[in-house]
Image (cartoon, rainbow, N blue to C red):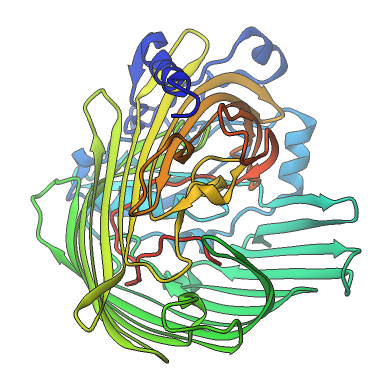
Length: 600
């Protein structure tokens, strides 16, 4: 294979160094309510030392452990705000010291109390359920304007069977901006606010310019509302008006977020007119005019299964159904087995799923300072339905299995297996198999630096695909920064390894982590022998900069080289924002067709 053994050797070294170098393993589980912070001499000279936490209540009457108070009566629920710039959600007595923090607090509008209360799932007079409270913390933390949330228990000496709940809430700085240049005379600039007037409304606007096209200026507008009137129903409106695209989208949805929400669903409507570049496996269709209308409706019901008292997991059976359609008023010329994505179609799908799931608090996985809720459990799902197009009517069937859990002191492992296919006159077509494994080690703590390693393995295979359909190792689908038509095929195997060094450095709240990564992939087509030319790899190093107290994406600087891949188009240096990764939970979503190829 191209590049010999070098990428494999480097990958093994990069993955094992953090395991060997760490002085101790720390799962970073936050059940105790205590957070560990380290700082070197330089950071302590410039910034306030995060080691000393300032609590308003006596530790003797405030507890973070919830399970021991199961079935006690909630007498009162109090919300306590933690300063937006505090190092920890437990630092309830933090007072902003720098002029920058004081200015930020002056300009910031705190999330209104009524908005926070709408997201609380329990009420005074009810019995405490530690599992429900931890689920509630997770829901509040998932709000785009909340940095962290934590329930604490305050005992009532005169009423031993009752307790008071204290909900600690820490806001995010809600305003952000960004932009980029796609040429000397083309680019964009964006501004957003995810908590307008403290009401939790999200507004994002983008201005585009491109001197080579008319009109020169374009715009994008998005407006969203989370948890409307405590119903956990959210909405989103989008509008785009550019030289090559005019579109509007209306979306109203409610997800399965907790076992306490029995119903979920969504309504979608979109109308778009655009010019697109369509990438097929061996060719490109340029400047294709599209004009389509799309509608989507799905609904689901969860039936909670009884569990053992005090269990930290919930089980449920989920039944979901979905009806959708897409109508092309303008588009490329299609044929029976060609350009499937651009054919008028109607779909009716149903799913049944069995889920068992819990969450564990951790940190320093995909964020730097935020509490991350790591799901553990499993999900089994079967999907079936019918599709109607202008060329054929055919049934569809799919199944998936996923599971994840911590492996004692050896990290966390997640696995996913999916299979789906259409049947046309008894013949399986457009089938796909998708296998994913993801693993990360425990956080290895050194005297100054912390380490964690990540690994993922992906296998995808197509069976009797339509003309032009493919899986890819290009760029975000595989080897970052590498592009070539030779990286497209019917089957692929991709291995991604990365080791991350978390530093104690802070600059105006921004944290710095350094990473080294290795991507290795193999892609081939059915009926063809595997050769050295089917192997691709990339070795990268870089730095990520993020302030978890702000709504900005992570900024990444990456240098990558590609041994033996001279024939592909490569981007050796990359700088810009990267969206944060999320852990896969075990709640089902709307029934869907298994997608696998980046055609459009």
